[in-house]
Length: 562
Image 1 (tube, rainbow, N blue to C red):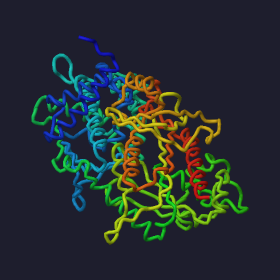
Image 2 (image 1 turned 120 degrees about the vertical axis):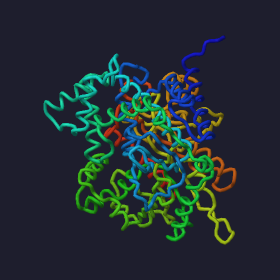
Image 3 (image 1 turned 90 degrees about the horizontal axis):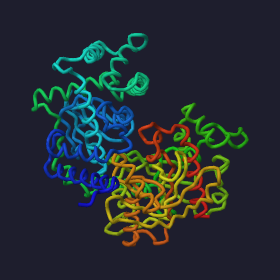
Image 4 (image 1 turned 60 degrees about the vertical axis):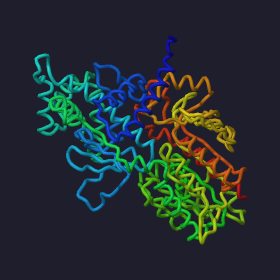
């Protein structure tokens, strides 16, 4: 029998994990301790994702991975032994606490101290994401539980001290805190320095946004939950996927009303006959370039704002309400009411005074245009949700049995992605999208080229890998993709956007020569230690590439209509 390479084993593990999740959907539930749960855990261990670092080392608890997961799961998840995934959000008006994680737009409700309900509105990618995180969390909880007791079955001194710390309230500082952290570091198998760094990271989130319970309580409740389920198997963690959830996948329950609301607003504003340009991006960079100087009181002889990054830093420091200024000059905020978690902005460039935009932005075309463009900025989609949103957005608007097509001139996708050919902060331009685990591959006639961006930021052009999830990435698989496809990066939405765009062209909903622009800045490099997503956010390091891409996109849009 031929021995599989590490890359082949990892690819089999990804496929096995996806198959396991699909099987759970048909069955309706699973426990991490049953056969399907163990299969998921085995797949994750074989895969050994870069984002989960030392997950496979039984001697230590993976702290960076723990930080990453806790930021993306709701507060209190460590105490729960019942988790329900549903598509119905019928909890408004109840006494259940609504919780949203700080770094993942998802809605959940704490039904009781040990029961949590996720409302899934973003499709399969969200289900994979949650179950991957729960599988990792269970693995680390089992490591913690194994350190609770000594060979005689009695609680260790360190565990008793941890229990005392949690019940008495974690000390804020001083020698008592150092002693508590030292005891905790023994349980975690980590150095004092590593333990303190994770404690401080989680403590900052706990105090500023109440987004987690803190490291002491987190470790204590994770270990205690596993210990209790070993003593009473009926209390073992169980995860339910409701039939309604699985039936709703692919039916566009959320995307249709989301898109209908946007189209209705464009018609209401009288913008439906104007050239329309769609940008999938963050919700700050476009408005900051267009309205930031005016928000700071600059322009028209009132003084400069400096370079773009300097202006953005000042906007952040002064907490300037740029959107309030934009509202007086053609900016319309569209808060999501359909459940997609994707807010939008409609920008009527006819109401923008060219003298008030950032001076580095070339708006000469805006002064000369007779038919000024409308820009629709939509916040980031999540994985396969991108297909649902873009397909419905490009679909005709029906009124009195008559289809109405909008004059869509360009579609741009900008965002963050993992880079395979460079470093954090570099820029990637897609020439194709390869959807992981499928035969769906799409070439892209990208209207962006390296020469559009100057030479002070490295630019890489090539295929982009659209992955199932950032938590299912393995270094060997990524190297194989890099070498076999000449891929320059990986992300989660581009291929799904392109799938919807190609379908819209075939259906005649948008012209075949529509301008497509795909640009990403590198938020991480999963092939380099210390540069994975689990190593922390980029901070101001990401401002320069983000605003460089935004500047190029806006100038292209304005030039299109000139």
